[in-house]
Image (cartoon, rainbow, N blue to C red; front, side, top):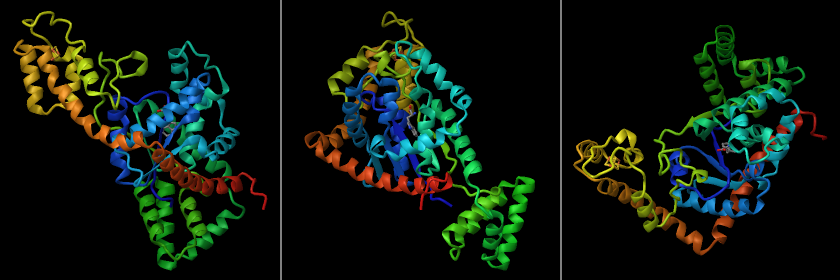
Amino acid sequence: MYPDRVVSGMRPTGAMHLGHYHGALTNWVKMQAELPCLFFVADWHALTTHYDDPELIERSTWDMLVDWLAAGIDPSQATLFIQSRVPEHAELHLLLSMATPLGWLERVPTYKDQIDNLASKDLATYGFLGYPLLQAADVLIYRASEVPVGDDQVPHIEMMREIARRFNHLYGKEKGFEQKAQDAVKKLGSKRAKLYNELRTHYQQDGDDEALEQAKAMLDDAHSLSMIDRERLFGYLEGSRKLILVEPQAKLTASGRLPGLDGRKMSKSYGNTIALREDKDAVTKKVRTMPTDPARVRRSDPGDPARCPVWQFHQVYSDNATQEWVVKGCQSAGIGCIECKQPVIDAIIKEQEPMHERAQPYLDDPSLVRAIVADGNDVARKLAQETMRDVREAMGLSYT
Ligand code: TRP
Ligand code: SF4
């Protein structure tokens, strides 16, 4: 009933690195060509953990936007905006909070994990507990169908699906819904009405998902129906409620993960990153000083790629022939580690060249980024306002 749409966000807490690029941005670049996409800077989310460091947020926001553009996010295809510039996210967050059980928030795995990991910070705050609910509002407000995220975020997407379902259940009621829905069925014409009723029964009695899909496809084609009747018929298929909010799907990043220089997860807090727009000399130096298989003390000692972070880089950056050369050369001590690292250095520098080029105009004239975001904020806000009209009405707040 609602068009497919992709929504994702990132927290502006520092410069983007190649881990972000391979973990998320390449996926965004691919999706922007396939579906309408909204990508936003989650500045309020950054405040949930960095509430004591407000200067960091603004600087990181602009840097991050340049990084996105450098990575190939194209503002003529995707909408780029800043979360706090669309205050409707906060309104939806507040309204959703009314009926969100505390237990749903407390059991999200990232909640306890982060409190333990960031022990130096006091995260026993109201804002931090509400983090996944704010994230739910970010997505539900655009009725997104897909959310590209890393696997650590899957529980958040699961929770937002539950939030949407609960919302529709609580507020999707409409006086005389059943009757209005049946009147709408008649408007389909007798043949299609019959088919609709059959498919609905199949789905509701036998859980036949194909029947549901078929019925939805038929409604998509039923152009003579008014918007509101169509909405009722979509809701009637699955129960006796209007669907005000849409349950989104997580879209996991397919590309291989790039670890940090030391083989752990690439992360600023581990000091093992290569920045997205790192300069060539720094890339060379960082890779040359990467740790290798600790068993290869001397050049003549054979090594094992499985124990070497450089090999993980080869798996992301090198073709089969090069990978074979590495495995053979390493295990036989036929190549040295410096030699082995060179193709990785070359590949990273080559990957980054177009990124530096794309970033340059925005570095020369930062007002370009401001203008892209101003446009994006407007586009996002309009969409968010449409949903909020329905949400307010459903919750008894329309005051007409
Ligand atoms: N929680 C996400 C992260 O830490 C960032 C985020 C905030 C997000 N809101 C979102 C991601 C909405 C996807 C959709 O990576
Ligand atoms: Fe690692 Fe390559 Fe050295 Fe083997 S030869 S230990 S894979 S850097």
